[in-house]
Amino acid sequence: MSNVDRLIAEFEVGTLLRPSINTPNSVDLSRAVARLSGYSRAESPTGSETEIADLIGPAEHIVFVVADGLGMSILETLPEDAFLRRSLALELQSVFPSTTSAALTTLATGEWPVNHSVIGWWTHFAEIPGPATVLPFINRVTGASLIDQGIDAEAVFPVPSQISGFDRGAIGILPGNLVRSVYSGYSLGKAIRRGYGSIAEGVDNTLARLEAASGPSYTYLYFPQVDSAAHMSGVGSGATHAALEDVNRSLERLARDMPDGTKLVVTADHGHLDASPREPMLIREDDEIGGMLRYPPAGDARVNYYHVREDAIGRFAETYRECMPSNVLLLTPDEIQDLQLLGPGEIPALTRTRMGDYISICIDSAVFAWAAAESDGPDMSRLVSHHSGMTPDEVRIPLIVAG
Image 1: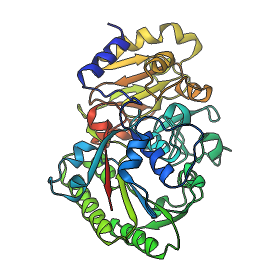
Image 2: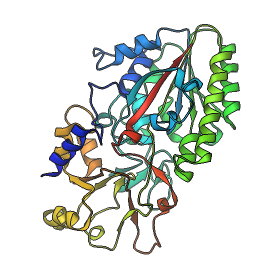
Image 3: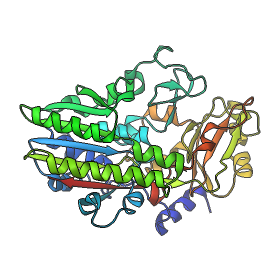
Image 4: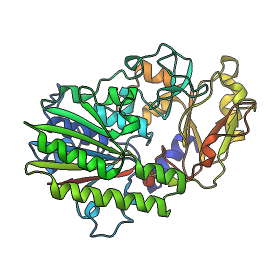
């Protein structure tokens, strides 16, 4: 059985969830919220965009909350009468890769990763050349700022944020350390950015903004706390549950105290799945696979993009399959396109360049890691939970509506 056939078999039995325009997804949600905020698209609505827009309904004020990492499997650990569970309007699917950089860029642009070209936590940039950590805007290997390397946001993010096209005042409320980041500036477009220290302060700032609004408004509120706790402690940990309860309690207060004419819309970028085994599948710069690569891999915990040396193209796939376990599938960009894993349509040249020659996908809870020749091991091995794959735990996300 080919790797493509194996992947299709996983989709058919439901152990993996296939990205599809026919399943309500975060692209549809992004476009629906943009439409309700006055953004006009040339093309007709697609997928579940109209259904989601009708679920939310028109509003003078829209508060759009992204609770990073709050997938359905984590949400469902709350009691059934908890605010977030009883306000659940619809279950959605995240995009692939189900990781923050790709999913937040989809929410900002209303485009699938195939079109916006941010296809991993580490995305390959020909300008370096090599992988960069997109959200911090740094070189993955050296940690140097991309700005210092002469790379600006326009080169990295070819599709602009929708928010600059909204017909209402827009504000983004973020943790204080993210307010001035390059990515926040890109993804929030024309929106004014304000920082907060705690979840409660983020809600206070949102309520103050709503009370002061002199006309129709859009407020973006970002909570990374559940994601951070899950990464460090695991999905079932006390720290993750405490962060979840804090988010649930705070958003219930926001829904209760926000002025009439406000709609609260809450979603997540992805879910989480604890790594098992804890030790990652390690590729080193100086081992057989690593020695065939032109650059360190791009991608994420459960998806890798490989740019292979020209003299190794003919033998890379066979060597890789011999070295890696059976839970890893190796595909070509053409196979990714045929399966439409990054979204519908032909893969544009920029995205193809960033994908490289081969793409590996882990189909269970194991994770990849990369280590330079002189290093002791990967930093990510200290993390307990990860995402970026296509398992239900990583892909299923909520749409919560109140007001």
